Amino acid sequence: MAGSDPAARLQVPKVQNERHVYIEVGDLHRMLRHVPHKDIRMVMVAAFYTGMRLSEILRSQIQGDALVVHDTKNGAAIKSVPMHPALKRYLKEWPPKHKKSTVQKWQRITRSKTGLDHVNFHDLRHSTASGLINSGADLYMVGQVLGHKDPRSTQRYAHLKHDTMLAALSKIGKKVA
Image (cartoon, rainbow, N blue to C red; front, side, top):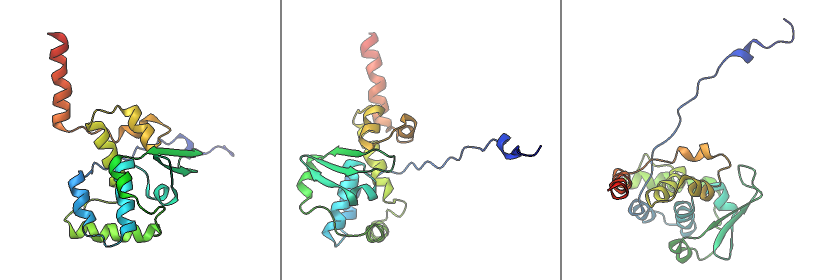
C-alpha cells in the first residue's frame, strides 16, 4: 500500500462559480461620470470595448489600430485586439499611468455611486463578450477576442438576451416556409 495515494481516487465536484453580470454602454457612461482620473476612465473604456483583462490593459501598447499585449495570462506570446471606433476616439495618452490597485479602488467607488454595486471590473470583460454574442458574433469569434485557448472557457459568456434568441428563432420559419 506504500506509494499509493488514496486521494487519487476521489472525484472533486465542479464548482459553479460563473457570474452572469454584464452592463450596457449606458451603464458604462454612468460609471465614467464618477471617475475623476482620465487614465482610469480610459482603462474602463478599454476593458468594455476590448474584453481585455485589467492586467493586460495596463501592459498593453497601441500598435496601429489594435491594443497589443505580450505574455498573456494564458501563455500566448502576443494578444492583439482591434480597437473599436469609440475606443480609438477615447484613447489619447497610452499606456495609463495608474496601478492595478488604484484602478480597482476607483471602480469600487464608482459602482457604489451609480448603484451598480454588483458590478466588478472583470464584468466589463464579460460585457464585451455578451455584447458580441448579442450582436451576432459566434462563440469562436468571442473566444478569439477574449484570447481563450479552450473553447469551453468561452461558453460561460454565452448568455443571450431574450430578443436576440427570439430573432434567431424567427429565422427558422423563414428558411422552412
